[in-house]
Image (cartoon, rainbow, N blue to C red; front, side, top):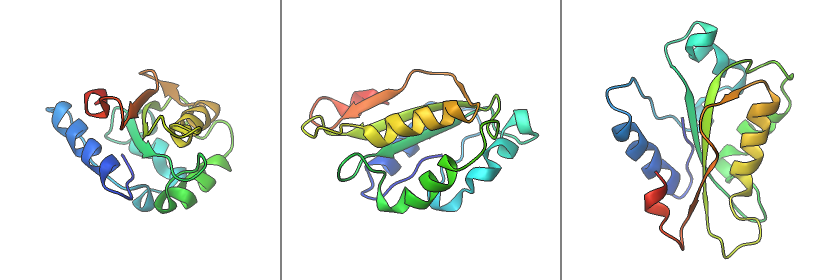
Amino acid sequence: FGHYFTGTAEAFAYRAKKAFRPLKVTVASCQSINPKTISSLCIVGGGVYSAVLFITSTFGEGLPPPSAEVFFKTLGSLPASTLSDVPFAVMAIGSSIYPDFCQAGIDLNKTLARLGGKQILPLTKGDEVNQQEESV
């Protein structure tokens, strides 16, 4: 899954989908996903997906993009075991010229772990001023 506002995260999501062939990959915006149902979408919860990849940008002073605010808020309010053993990875994109570089992705990564998710790859940070394209 990914979410997008400016199109950068969306483009990376489709690039990741292509890179992960022949796995079953679906690209979805955070607006179309209920955080409470993530576990049920994955194999550990009876669903079809092996893992969840989040691709997020950072807006303003370390905030998620406006299109993902509700998702982030809802996710953050869930009980600790909500994502028990759900495999996940996060790619945060932003610009290192800002003090809160990739903060939304950093916060998302911490929240997913707090909810019991199983991090399968280290947090990746894509810097638009330093070869962001090579991060995917």
